[in-house]
Image (tube, rainbow, N blue to C red; front, side, top):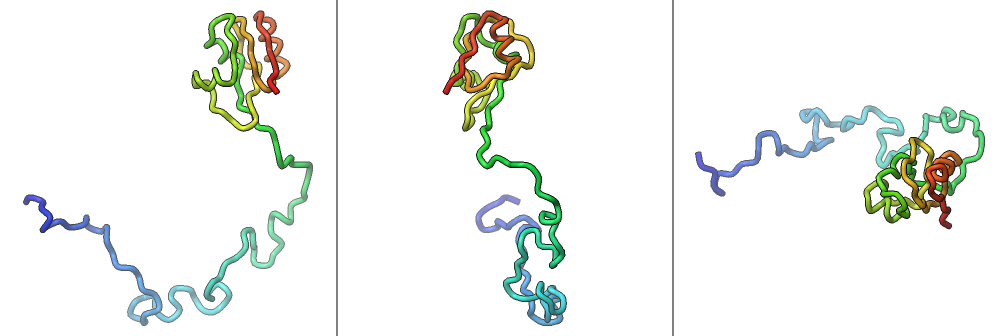
Length: 149
């Protein structure tokens, strides 16, 4: 049978009536509307706080506080020394170059170079931070590690 505007129908099971609660015992959701009998949870507008455990001391208060959590941490995008082999010898590596080559996504606080892997080419690398091993490997390969502000 050909499908035309006059005989279009929604797929089976895709449309169903909204359940009307509290409309008589025959509806399966009459009287208490599926909320049980009495109590705070059966009342209108009931909402419990996040972490509320019915009056018992909640877990986030039972556990001891410990240490210091910096509310403004510096998060660096990480580049390993091994990734810098993608550049030709003598080239200057900047954060913009790294993003352009798809080696990292731009982040808020800059770029940190870590010393994983080996560097085979001499490069001038501009980054916001370097690990000690990364700095050593760059200078050993005949390059320079320059810290950006």
